[in-house]
Length: 72
Image 1 (cartoon, rainbow, N blue to C red):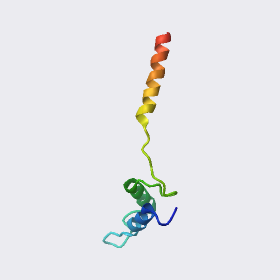
Image 2: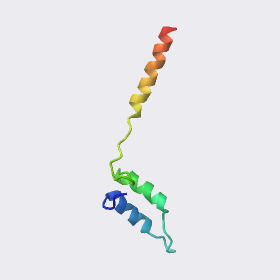
Image 3: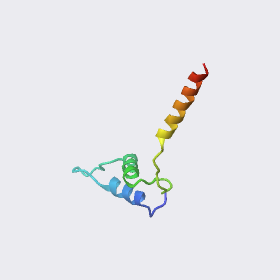
Image 4: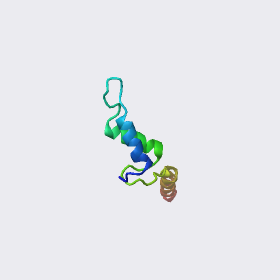
């Protein structure tokens, strides 16, 4: 967890925020999840989180199934 990253600073701020009773609004794990989603950075490494391209994987599976049907 590099300390001078956007996600680290965000987690500190979100976890530090409190509700009206003075208790933390979000747990530490929830704060990490919120900040990783909003900053698009991995909390552990500080690297960018890239979107996985699932569409191409599913197309590959469809092609495999269609080839096996043609052989039968």
